[in-house]
Length: 210
Image (cartoon, rainbow, N blue to C red):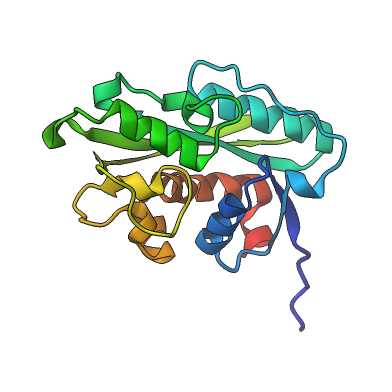
């Protein structure tokens, strides 16, 4: 008897960042899931990230987009917490250098603020909270944390965001110098996504993603 063909279900990523889609695709591998991003949608409003925590922002984005589109939605909020800066940039990581900030400006500001910080006090961590929401309004979260330190200058051509400045604990290379597979194994987002794997299996049903 032939096995019934299982059509792929759709998971909408509440982001326009294609790097995040690429990371997720590598981590979930050959799961039978059709991945969409906000670039595949039209007439969707920007969700204002006004939460006080990564979790609040991720849940708000996931629930809002899922309700508007009818798709199961995965949203994340992630950022860099630097101990010498009192946990900044934190939830403001993407716009650390202002509303028109980009990776270069954010990195430049971080380096300027840490110019006089000694090596032993340059500890930091990347944090990622993932929320998975259904159109009915339910939401579940998963979290990943990657500790490390901030380098004195950018190194490497890979990754994005603060990757050229962040050296994960136990390594002598920045995230931007690591191969994608190695970074995904230890990164905050990789850890959060692996924790979220079980949540996705519950939401989709195990057979729908195998």
